Image (tube, rainbow, N blue to C red; front, side):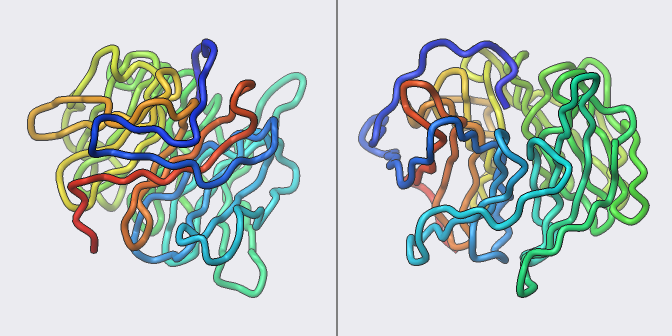
Length: 305
């Protein structure tokens, strides 16, 4: 999610950096659309599912292009926006929504089952206590999800059974601007858009409680504007969507480097790998580029499986 003012953005139907990484725009949505977060690759669900920030919707697309353009699969009642999404089990998701009113914005958490004849949405937590704007979302255990509180900082833990919420991580490492969030045991990985940080902290796989100190893997101007990201499944790396710099940044965990690998994707907000491989990204839409768009990115060293 954009948390700073964006400058004029340029668009391109095909973006290339060097001779290796290539990106192709597969779909363009209508003006005013904003795609926000995508579910992390699990090797389970066939479709890619993602949220819209301009509307309280979850959309899906077949990344192999066999079943048409992106389509809306569910719209949440009593909400104005959708933010975080994470897959709990095959075709079963947790989704964060906002209800923006004149006097306040409230946050709700839902489960969304996609394996029925029609989607089934169940509200788990309404008006999540102590949160300003929950954004990135990651599942830690069958009962626990964690979410970034982008506007004020901190990581909020929500119990999927009881709906109870508390701020489990806060302080200097999780300040205002904390944004993307992914979990791969034992680490919870996160970005901070304002600070230009990609970091991680070890957490208990049952409770989400921190078990170590937060560490910065990479930082700097190249990561200012860092939003959601995809964890590589074949190597120790992440691919970060940078909405402010209009690019995709690769962070290598072993040496802490962060390098731009794809340029000129207009205001990307999220990235993920498909269930059978292949990196995909979505954007927030710009005045010059039109609405939000969906991209396919070739990663030269990806090992499929």
